[in-house]
Image 1 (tube, one colour):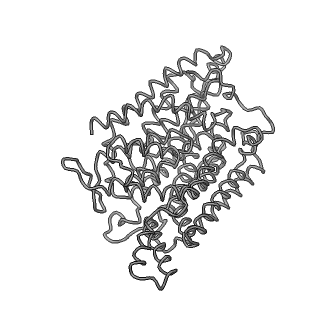
Image 2 (image 1 turned 60 degrees about the horizontal axis):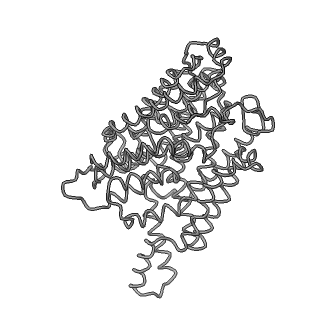
Image 3 (image 1 turned 90 degrees about the vertical axis):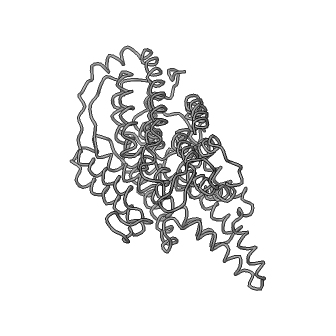
Amino acid sequence: MTDAAQPNDTPRSDPTDPTPTPTSQGGRVRAINTVGCVIVAILAIIGLFAGGHHGEHDHDDAADETAALVDVEQAPEASEEDALASTVEAKAPPPAWQLGTVPFVLMLLSIAILPLLGPTHHWWHVNRHKLLIALILSMLTLAYYAWFVGPASAILAIEHAIPGEYVPFIMLLFSLYVISGGINVSGDLKATPLTNTTFILIGTAIASFIGTTGASMLLIRPLLQTNAERKHRVHTVVFFIFLVSNVGGTLLPIGDPPLFLGYLKGVPFLWTFTLFFEWLAMSIVLLVIYFIWDTIVYRKEDVKDLARDEAIRKPLRVTGLVNFVLLAGVVFCVALLDPSKPIPGTTDVHPFLFMRELIMLGLAGLSLLITPGGVREANRFDYFAIIEVAVIFVGIFITMQVPLEVLKLNGAELGLSETWQYFWATGILSSFLDNAPTYLVFFETASSLPPEAGVEMVALTGGGEISAKLLIAISLGAVFMGANTYIGNGPNFMVKAIAEQEGVRMPSFFGYMFYSGLILIPLFVIVGIVIQSIY
């Protein structure tokens, strides 16, 4: 299978296409980005106001308690048994939950279908239109909560979705995006299969240490620049997403958001290094497949294009090196500033709520101030890609509250007990629900199971324990299968947006899933069999 015949792998030439390109950016795009930033910030402030009295990880318990209290208050003359029944009922899925999942399904369908339809193709490429869809569907979700559960539940849904999940998520991505955008790796190497494979190999190796977002933003632009003279580039970006934006982040909690959430739940910081074998095997296999694929299509490139590629050669040069220090600062923030734990070096001094996020934003602002002039211009840096992620994921995080609530409450009733079951259940849902919150659902489910005789357990730093084999399955499913769709992991969409800015016509939502189904799913079948037999 090659992408040689794909007509969407050539630079854009349609002057009416509203997607920002290096030649079309201007006041209109900046205004769109500003509007998106302001509205997303307003949503974040609303969520912060609603959740100001809660800790970062208390949202689910608070929601359950509040729902129970609301039920009891609505029936003051009820007996003790009725009050107890109300409390138990609060632990059940919300009424008509199937209806409550409709906005989330529509959100996914919008991402998948609107870019494909002729009348909406150009319309969808404008961020304010994506934001409009996200806000409408979010409001429908909140209306469902207010009507079927109660007005207080709608506020709690915002509290859980925005300050509890969205703000830490988008602030980490934003900080890494801005800081890595201040590092310019310039040059134009010969775009051979070996060169491209080396680029992706380096990104895979560093993703666990600077995050999949940082590694993706650092290397996607020089990789695209190196391949600028080649026509067949789609497969290169797809494999870059597979490896650098997902698989590469397996080894440390700072590598990928779900592993970071596991760390906050008490998984030891270095435990993820036990996944080294799986990370290495998957990385090697995918790199070999990519090298063979790129070798085949390289031979099909036009002779004139290869001649231009040979003629336009510049050595690699790295500028904006100070931003590596700032990236390290973000890494330390993620690793050390957990509101539920004392600041390292102290016994009882805890970071205040969102201290970590504020420091990361400060580091991003410092990067904007001290990065040498011209570096971001050389990167053709703008905020379009991160705004696209922000406006889409604000809709995803709000609309997915109902399906996540149902999964969390009924997860233990799913009958999951085997390693392969947790691997596939976590992975499939991570592909569409975003891998970070999905990881949490199955982490909670696995940690609630009684210990099995003879099964190795992982002691959690905050107390409790979880089956090691199930934690391995959940971690691999969330990280690896986040690569299955554009919405499985935050960096996926950013890489796609940057590639399209550079003239690569990326596959549609389903087109990308064709690649992942063809390449990744067979490998995941093998991984599932291996971890079931070993663990």
